Length: 210
Image (cartoon, rainbow, N blue to C red; front, side, top):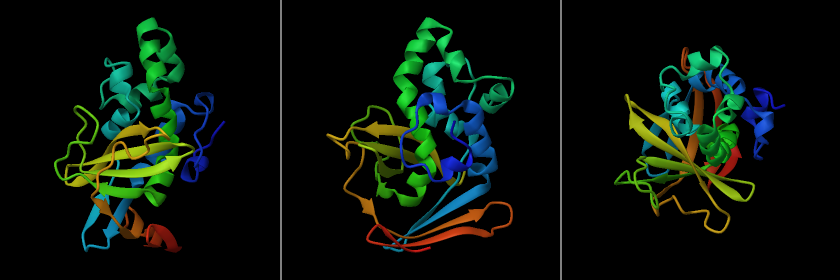
């Protein structure tokens, strides 16, 4: 079984049986929700990324699996015992859960994608090769032979991760644009006190110094 600390460094897709909604909630509350991610680009621009419960709800595709779970009550449901096994009790929900399993397991690799992913700007907010997905940026990293494409959109004064799109090895760049943003530095800070948790400098998308 994967632990919370494993999610900080995981770079391979786990098995669905090695994760749980309780684990993901713990990681969000203890790690993701308490951190800000400052991306500084070589063109002089920057963005600040933060996580929200409703964003995680959408990244895990809960709205497509069981729409009766409200996005702002997701973690309360987990506290009350909701877990992945509950998505197998009903035939129609089970079918939807099956189609979203890969997105759910990909969430385990989101932290590494934030640290090592390539960043692409979407001027018109329409994610390529999708019908309705809106995002300002895609942060992309290959996990195994598939692409983890993290959609980030400006909401509530911050850029919030709110979708995961998976691209195949045969077309890894399906969801990205030609507007690549070269990251020069990433600062990960504590939301409460502003203390720097990690500082990473990059050169040509490779880590230069930590």
